[in-house]
Image (cartoon, rainbow over all chains, first blue to last red; front, top):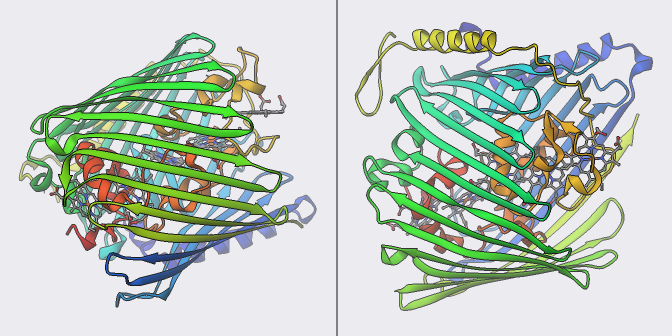
Length: 423
Length: 169
């Protein structure tokens, strides 16, 4: 653990990453290096008005940078982040905010790519872990059937209160059984300020015993309060080529699943002590013709304390006259008044040669009045234009009418620039 | 620190002990699972040979049923109808398959920790994603959030919640 503490400074980690990178550049024989660089810049400008007619104009700049050694595929560097600057605001908070979302080096030292390492700030998706960390992770596929992954470093989610004595470690072992099943066992442990922050274990499953059926699932256990956090399972049946029937089941215990939350709405004081949710139901996906798909669904929400509710309806997706469109109608029928409403949504997307247009409308009609209003809607229109292969522009307007903000209008502009180069 | 008190005040045994238990279990299961059942080795490429822009139905192009990717049939990965509700399982199963088409930024577009722009705002040109967050969300989230907070928790429970703290402490 002392070693992890040593890593306890961001700067130190990045310095290490880049020294390693430079070192590797020296180690790899010059001739074998062919590097491609992909750079994407996305700039967003948002113009917004609040309920008191104050204007806001935040400007966002996002970048994505990927450097790959294309010839051997042994080494690559990936980075992404963003910065916001408020051109206009009435708030006295910082006008400038930024985030380094990821910056890591990826190494695949073996020819068959069965071993990979990632170093730096990166995301780990592995069983119970969906983490952004400053550290190291590795995946080794010992045989085509068996894999081990481990990770360790500083969690980003506990960054706010300082990073002294914070760390995270975890891993997953996975086993495939022929092409019929895959099982994973995972573990995660994190400390914040030398206090146990999270300790979770999980079992993830994929089963495909016959071609007409598949199952995906995850069960996770909170080791700190000795309780199952979540079971969530999703089955898919393929009775015909154009029909998929997917029943699902999930159970979440709020107290253990929302352990150590940083937001009051997820605490038992707010949601009720010992509250949990059990969801079951499913979707059907039926491709009626090549241009029409129907997705009826039904979900039952059951609670220990709050009254139960049922959500049902359907989506239809069309693809006619080159217009990709969808219609959705749902009814939420709950025991509590707030959980009784009808939801409708319609969208259409048309692509011309260089121009793409999208319209989207949402309408919610509540059985109960909020501030004397029962209906709420949101309209959005967006146009995207490709100026060149590398540059495209998007403009969007959005209008919402809700019971609390009688209305809200916002406009949005986006410029995307892509750049590719091989050295 | 041998004992840890959690918020509920229960006494818990030491974590090195637990970790050891978990590790033993993992090793045991590893030994028990017969690795003799070798599957055919398949190559997962660095990047997909064909660039795709719309949500793909893999089986439109990969029609041979006996062909597998990451040990699963192609139809598993079909990005059809409810894919957004299912993608988490593949991600959790540590799938390398996703990386052949998706850069990290694709995932962080929706899953960042300090993100201030809603995915539906950034990609309003893609209403076919049926994402719920729109300009109306400051109002409608009360209902969605009360129905199923476990959906919101992964993105807002421990991070990405500065905006929320304006109203929720």
